[in-house]
Amino acid sequence: MSGYEAPIGVNIMGEVLVLNPLVILGRRSTVGALLASELGWKFYDADDYHPEENRMKMQKGIPLNDEDRIPWLCKLHDILRRDVASGQHVVLACSALKKVYRDILIQGKDDAPLECDQLGKEEKPVEVKLLVVHLTGSFDLISGRLLRRKDHFMPPELLQSQFDTLETPSAPENFIQINVDKNLSEIIATIMETLK
Image 1 (cartoon, rainbow, N blue to C red):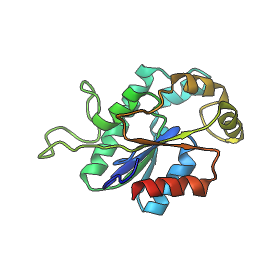
Image 2: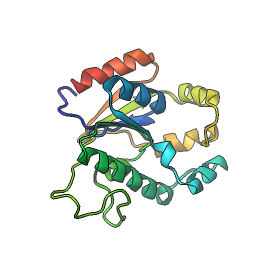
Image 3: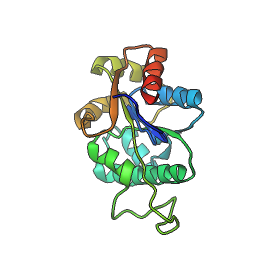
């Protein structure tokens, strides 16, 4: 992918980045925060928006299902819409593991109420465009990093469920894929080059 124009946000997926917003998946919080700082964009870590019920479930070692994730993703969509409407560029670190989850970040869900914005306030609907930065790595590599992570509500035992749920981004999604075995500066440089 080259020549991506006028990004508003980036989503980093888990393992993802969302662009316009940019979403980052994988090693996402570190990459997302550094990228947002380099770009002068706003940064959101989607984990900060999980409801307490989701956090408790994960702490007990129970994987989240669609019913747990969809309201959380709708809330994130509303945040992205609000920021895009105000002209804010955004990096979102988010484990939007399935295509349908990434679709919700882009367009919301028809039957979900908006929390951050109400329909009808804008003269025309705000379009959220995403660049998904899919950070990939082997199970062993990512597992080793999770074991070193402190003070997070998701235990490393849930990693396999994340791998099982993951639907790797593919065309026609707007995405790039970067292996997390690269060093942080190489990952950021690759993303920055894509954004030119």
